[in-house]
Image (cartoon, rainbow, N blue to C red; front, side, top):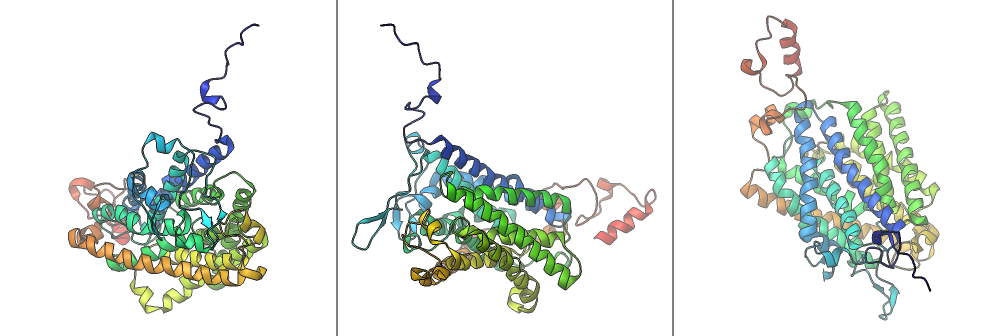
Length: 486
């Protein structure tokens, strides 16, 4: 009998080989890595561009760099110790055991979240451990980009005055002592996960926590300079829209990747995400037109963001009609808190939340969590949640208590972030001033980084004849217009 010819397919593509184990689903692995890349693009370059363009010109470099630095710092901290604190073995009901996610044996084995096995009260298994059909390396990176974007969203509250050196210390501390707690409690197999609190893709873990922590950090850092608070126009609205576009389209990975598989629930999540975001943007714009007589493109971006945030905790758990209702409310409730309540609430006015992260993420995230508790559809819940027979309040039965669970989960995230973020800020301030010096606040990027976004003299920069030349005689109007900008 003639010998079989050698297999012409490289080992890397052969089923059953070491590189393609029997448990690997290439479709799921591909979608997970694509989703991770989409979420990464939301930060890099999405929010880097958005932050660098939505702020006053003199803060463009600093704002973009804060996002860039946070992304890089989180990646390193995540693989060295923070991943296992969020998704590893249980240490406490709200925290996993720290450890590295760097070794080959760990990273190429099948992904598993060891604390997610859910039991009935009698000790029998109700829902098996989460074990997606791809390697741990895909899971580690997917969860990493979520952690990174949370810190970047938080940064939006303190742009234009937080010391960059203090930010360098803040990022690893907040990731370690705040983010990991929320992630393990709600996603990694902590007490809120097993109690049945619904957070499909980060309405609480990411948005509520970043909004509350951002407001808390802004309180401790203090406000921007008076001149900046009075006038803070974006330096490039069109570039801001480019960043916003990356944020919106990247949300397909943000919500579509959280079933940990390319299944029918993932498709529902992506569709609902876009329905809610579009509805919210339209409602916010309509409200601007009705009450302020002008449609604002910055307002439209805010409405887009609140819609994306609101649908996040329930993206794959609610029906399309519920996504429209959530969009209507996410385009109106945060609009009301930002435009009406904020201007009448003295306490909130004293805290300078630069980009209104409290309204766009904390308010919208909490709203989405509560609405998920109302509208979560039983069949969709069965596709995703560990607690069987979960459902929203409008579906009766056990759904009546779900809203209460959502409120308790939110209260834990809010309370933890206020306390821990405050402690972190106080400790850092003992070593590094949280706030920039008065000279840096006056000048901006040139004083802080020695770099500027545009090769133009103007906003925030002190005139220096050795750098700019004497333009009085050649361009008499230039000096006048620049002074007006200042």
